[in-house]
Each structure stands twice: as C-alpha cells, then as structure tokens.
Image (tube, rainbow, N blue to C red; front, side, top):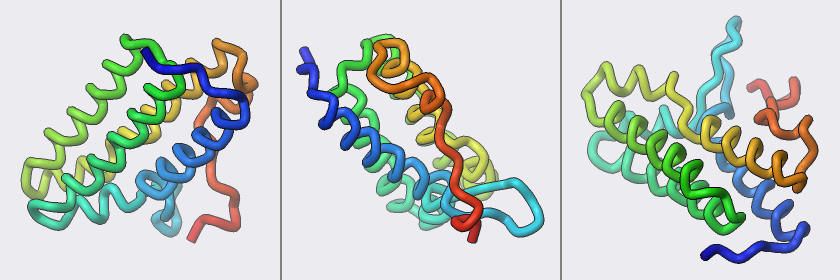
Length: 138
C-alpha cells in the first residue's frame, strides 16, 4: 500500500515528473509548426538501447504516481501507455516515426494530474499538462 505523502512531497514529485515528461515528449518544436517532440523520440532512434533507456524513465514516472497513491486502475492505464510506446518503438522505421507522435509521458502526466485534482491536492487548472513557455520553444 503506497503511503500518502505530505503536500510538499507531492509538489516536489509533481515538479520532477512534469519536468521529465517535458524533456521526454515536448522539449523541442518543429519550426513553423505546433508539433513538439523530445528525447523519447530522438533517443528511440538508437537501435536496441534507445527505447529501453526512455522506457526506464517512463517507468520512473509510473513509480512516482504509485508513490503518490494513484489508484490501481489508473496505474494500469499508465502501464498500458508504456506498453504501447514500447511496442510502437520496436517496429523499425515506422515505429520510430510513430514514437514521435505517441506521447506516453504526457498521457501519464495527465492521468496523474487528473487523480491529484480529484483528490484536491492540486487545483483543476494544473490538471491539464503544462505547456512550455514561448521562450522555451527552441
């Protein structure tokens, strides 16, 4: 049974998870478009170890969600998102292209935000995954 962390611990964990999801899924913007991508897509291009490395980071997000007391049913959805990301990443070339579009970390972050918002731990405005500031659109 996961323990119920204090508000300061929740905020610190949420900041870590938000930052990690941002770097993995949204750090860069394709110039002239609204399409964003991160290290999950880039590192996933490395045969063999790329997807393993980013999947371990995604697993960390799921671990943090478990520590924050997210329900088992939501954890299962988060693990399913990781599973889809893994299966998609295995397929050569097409899988690499699709890996840029399927943002498992953003999906999992939204699930975590929704749960914390329902519990009243974070406000509803934050329940939507934060978008990068315009100055971060490099």
